[in-house]
View (cartoon, rainbow, N blue to C red):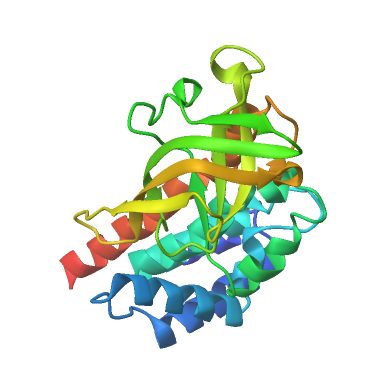
Length: 261
């Protein structure tokens, strides 16, 4: 059994300790899973994590941020048992992060599905020419009638190809660079949204290049205010940044355990 003495640290409370014990027992009983069919494995993991109640921690329904300590505990534990399980959990929170923090009540209805494991989410930010350089996004969203029309391309999108809903960032032109971006809520069956290519990587997980070709969205697909997309993206990434370190710690602890036998 890995060292658990950190659970006594003062910034964790009894609810965190109870969650850690519950999750450790669940992981011992259900992980790792068979990764040979990665799409199916991810869908099954999301469903199982939702049924067990762990996905409820990926979002709130009132516009407040999830508890980062809880997210870190869950990601460290899942990563130590099965990296794909950590991925499945993290993407439910990251994909719907814009809705959690900035969405309307109607948009937050999706959270009932992503927190229960009934729907899979994805965060569509990166592009061929703008990975970490978010301000350089080229995908364009223009107003048409009572809605929006989007054209462009996204790549390296985790859960691309299996997601039920995407949060998509595009340039709406309120200002140059970071000042002219907005965020949209896009169901996967929206006409004009195409999975152009599935991408293979060394550590298999669902990953895709998306093409947006005259994709029409209603006005209420806009998350937050037009022109505030950069702030939305950074707020979500900042929320989950420390949890990446927690997952890395889980991987490292597993590697140490395997090395020492």
